[in-house]
Length: 199
Image (tube, rainbow, N blue to C red; front, side, top):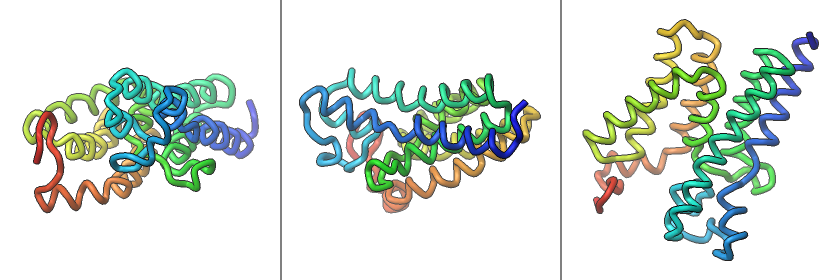
């Protein structure tokens, strides 16, 4: 069994390397659509990729942004141990929201957050999905649904007895909320776009 600190640092580094791959930017460039940061919100995530009109690219971005968290966690869980797996989750999420290659300006982290949940404890994905769907149905605000689900997830993990994952996802949820500050401001002002319509 590797020494704890080297394993944790290795997990953090591997997670960051995976998480910092800007799939939204790469896919849109490969598709000949230019720099996705020049349109919409300027974000590299799936929601902004969808603004190009290419649903397939947006779906691919969503899946790849999620899987980079899942894969990093599973690799570290297999070879470096549970502490390193947690560190990999943290690294993957931070890598996505603050990739060094893009001047630390990345995505908002929802897809990678879900991917980390899948790697850490698949039950948490169900918690996230149930809350997201419920809030989205009630409000038609995707951002509000993601924010609510991100808070419910660590609470759900704690109730399920996975304290380590609950602690980590609580920290990640706080970062996710910070990245959604503009959405929160629009929600408070009543100007946030709704699912399937305007305003």
